Amino acid sequence: MARKAGKSAAEEPPLKLFYIFYNEERWNNWLRTLSEADFEGDGGDDVPEGIAMLYAFSEDITLSVLKIVRLWQNERFKADEALQKIDDIEAIVLSELPDGPLVELVGPVQESVLVLFAACRRFIAGDYDKDVKALIKRGRTLAAQGADETLEVAAEIGAAVIGGAACCARYVKDDIEDPTLFDDWLVEIETMGEAMKSLKNFDEEPGESS
Image (cartoon, rainbow, N blue to C red; front, side, top):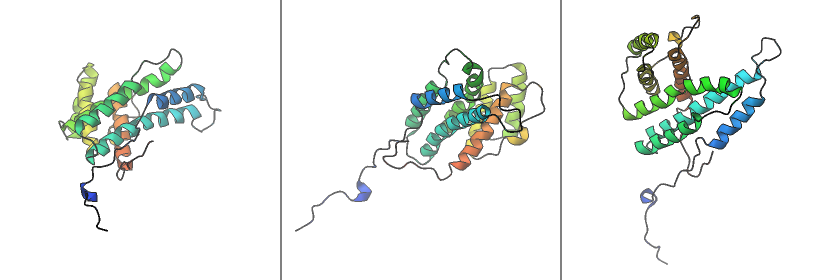
């Protein structure tokens, strides 16, 4: 019997991808876990459970967003699709927190990841400076002045790091008494750089759901 003519495998449309990067259930699960965590510890040298968990919570957000960027780089998404997915996560992560101790714990995380979302948008747009040293100098000046443009400069640094530039451990000052939000953003950008390295071979498989 003759074989029916049809599209070759190369001509078949790609399977739809179902990866869930982040959702409200995941966010609420983290908030519930953090609300039950011990932030005091036993007074020993070990980091309290809650502090370690708070860092993991922040890192989880960073990885989730940067996976979208990586898949855009792999041409799995068009720019507008990637930006919409980033917008969706931002709406969840920057949502209003319930009254209580979580505000003091999670609020700073929300502030620090502002640079994550801004930097990813800059990177996808391709509109950013790559001179990290000059950008940090400018950012510190603007931060000292309380200028609104500080986030824009930090976003450029973040975009450069997503693109492979080195930053920001040597620029983070551990000994300053009153770190600015810009300093917090540099710490987040350092986390972003490490996350991008860990996602070097990341790609989405058709039908993947988590």
